[in-house]
Amino acid sequence: MPFFLVGCINRTKAWWCGRKGPGLWQSFYDLRRLLAKRPVVSSTSTPVFRMGAYMVLACTLLAMALVPLFGQFTPVGFPLDFVAMAYVLGLGRMALLLSAMDVGSPFEGMGASREAMLGAFTEPALFLVLGTAAAATGMGSFAAMLGQLHTTPAYGLIALPWCWRSWCCCKPRRHACRWTTLPPTWN
Image 1 (cartoon, rainbow, N blue to C red):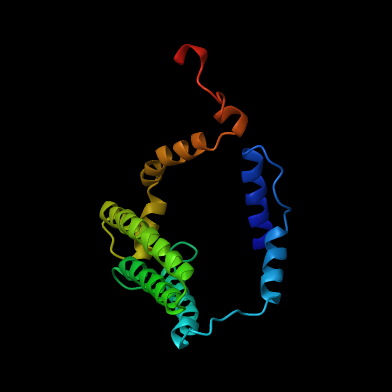
Image 2: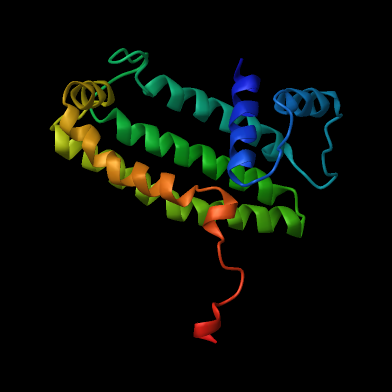
């Protein structure tokens, strides 16, 4: 089912861009092809490279355990658990960076620097969003915060301008790019 959903999303994105898009099961075919490949490990890498993947997986699973399921049930919950979730995701990012730099290739170094730059931009935004939601609800726990946001419809109106902006930016290509050059009066 997730592969079909990803295929529907990719097909819809392609339709909005005026293209046909990939098949609905393309992500399943890609995963099957990638799982059939043999791992390629550099001769200069150390065990840090192999442990990095396990560390990223462990951090992702722990972060998933901190997020509430079905409303207010949290497998692992405590006060200020949203801060711990952000730090666990940051720890996974650091493990990914260390394993990329361990290989000793300049291409992995460039990828690691790109990942670090992405983290430098997204992690403060994540903290800002979670901190704003905690301040707006007055709750310190992820489950209580989402429960409060779920029961109060006024908080949902905060996201309305962002949804409207996203919808306006995702118009079909034939409407979004009406002029390919400047109009004659602007030359």
